[in-house]
Image (cartoon, one colour):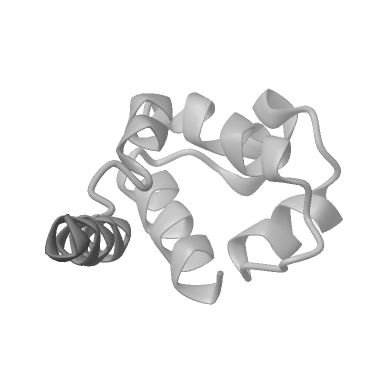
Length: 86
């Protein structure tokens, strides 16, 4: 979460958005905003989504968990076991 908060901070700085304006656009207090940029895990997921939206990065959320290589490995192993029994 800390790394994610840091990435949000860098994205904000690249866009030259002040902390006050960013918090205002997100509709959160400055305290919540600062906790978000520190990656506080108690911040609601929706708040992180609002930050992504303000930064124009909300489409990136669609990339989360799209490539489930571990899940596919488990699935393939189960399929192999099933076919060995047949």
